[in-house]
Image 1 (tube, rainbow over the protein chains, first blue to last red):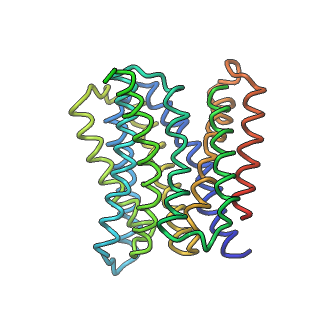
Image 2: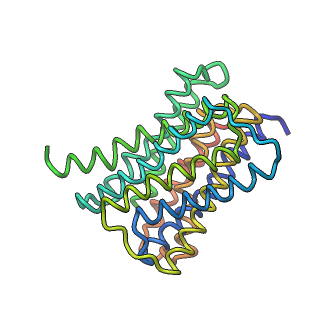
Amino acid sequence: MSNNEMGIIIGGVAPAIILGLFMVFQKLATRNGAGPGQFLIILGGISAVIGGILFFAKGEPNFPVTGILWSILSSACWGISMAGVAYALFKFHIPIGKLNPIFNTNTLTSVLIGIIFLGEWSQVEVYRVIAGAIIIITGAIIVSKA
Amino acid sequence: MKDNTKGLIIGGFMPALMLGLFSIFQKLGAQQGVGPELFIFIGGITIAIVGAVLAKSMNSGKFSTRSTIWALLSGTCWAIATACVSYAVFNYNTPMSKLSPVFNTNTLTTIILGMILLGEWREMKIARVLVGAILIIAGAILVSGS
């Protein structure tokens, strides 16, 4: 199997399935009374524990400072996004069905920024990726309104 | 600004931008030497901090054994999925503009799992799920083959 295929399977297909489970468990946590703040604390905590054990068990841990700063920024974006969704749901009572189609377009944000600013145009067929992303978003919106 | 507009910005447009940036910054971190273990370690700590701020600023539900267990399972899935994405970028240099559309097909997994595990098929429009699913899969094939 080529590196490209391995990358797509490990970094695309596997997370698609596991993130589906993530959302089902999130729903169950919320149904059983977990608030958004509590949920993020537990999610962050378990992730830090798993990551910490694996990272320090490898031996000779190194700390690339620039990379760590990007990683903090990255996960802060994720956490703040989740907080934003929760805030809109609880404080402004916007139905999730209205928010979902909007934040689902985030794929397009990463595709466009990746292609334009990270120079990924040389690694992908630009029109195919953009067309595919739009088709996926359309499908996701239809499915989430079912 | 109307509450409805505020809610759509905070819970829709802001996450659409920031969830996209999450993937971009994740890649920048990987390019600067942050592997999957370190990423979910740092990410976990950052997200737990965001969660703590959120819990302080709004009513965060009650800690119960059940909600905690589901949140732990959900967090574990998030950590594994996120580590998979980092692994593919870190080891195979797979472009994020390919990975992001593919792992964003997780909406379909969530719907299918919800139908099977949570019995949600009773309240869903199956025809819409099928149309959406076909679009999502077609888009993913288009992107990953590019």
